Amino acid sequence: MATGGSKFAIFASMAANLGIAVMKFIAAFFTGSSAMFSEGIHSLVDTSNGILLLWGIKRSKMAPDQKHPFGYGMEIYFWSFVVSIFVFALGGGVALYEGIKHLIEHSSEIDHSTKMKYWNYGVLIGSLLFEGASLWVGWKEFRKSYPKGFIRSMAKSKDAPTIAVIIENGAAVLGLLIAFIGITLTYYYNNPVFDAWASILIGLLLTLVSLFMAVETKHLLIGESAVAKDIHAIEHIFKQYKELEGYGNIKTMHLGPDDILLGANINFKDDLTVKQIEPIVQDIKNKIIADNPKIKYVFIETDSIK
Image (tube, one colour):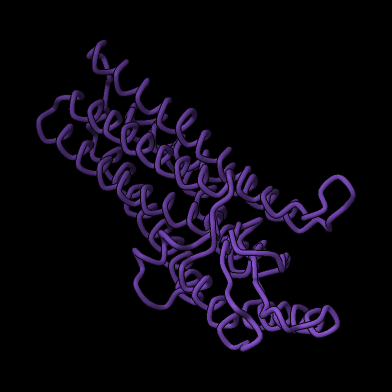
C-alpha cells in the first residue's frame, strides 16, 4: 500500500480520537467513572500515536545519503515500534492502574442521576460511531492493496502504519464495548467494582495489542523478507534465461513498506564470455524491477551457487 493511503487512514483516526478523548474526559470528570477515564487516556494515546506515525512516514521518505545509502525506509518501522510502547505504557499501564486502584479502594463514586447516565451512554455511543467510522476508513484503505484474505493479508503486509491504525481502532471499539458493559453493570447493581474491572480489562486488552504490535514490528526492524509470491516471481524470471545453468541463494529484505533489497547468485554456462554475460545480468535486473517496483536494489553475483 502506498503511504498516501496510510496518511489518510491516520488523519481520519486522529480526528476521531481527539474529539472522542475530549468527550470521554468530560464524562469521566462528571461521573467519576474509571473505565471512562481509561478510555479517555486510550483515545488520547491513539491521537499522539497518529502524530508519531506521520512523523515516521515523513522520515522514511528522506532521500538516501552517504550515511544511509539505502535510504530511511525503516524509520517507519522504528516509529511504529515506539507507538506499540506508548500503547503499553500510557494506554494499558494507566488503565490497569486506575482499575486496580479503584478495585482496592472500593471508593469509586459513580453519579447515578439520569442526567449523568445519559452523559456516559451518549459519549460511549458517539465514540463507537466515530471509532467505527475510523476503523472502516482504515480497513477500506488496506483492502485497496489487499482485496482478498483479510487476516492473511494482515500477516503478510509490511505497511506498519496502516496495520497499527486498524489494530488500534479495533481495540478501541472492543474497549468501548467493555466500558459500556462495565458501566451498565455498575448502574444496575449499584456497585463500582464492575466499573473498576472494566478498566482492568481495557488495560489488559491494550497490553495484548501493544505486545502484538511490538512483535510484528520487531520482525520488520531486524529485516523481514519479501513474501513468497514475490520470491516466486523472481525465480520465474531467472527460469526464462537459457543461458543460466542455475540460480540460488535468493535473499530479500524489506527496507520499508515499498522498498525491497534483493541479492542472488546465478551461474552461467561455461561457454559464455564476459561480454555476453554483462548485458544478460542487466536485463535480468531490469525485468525484476519492472515486474515488482517495490524492489529498489538488486545485487547479483555470477559465481558458483552456494
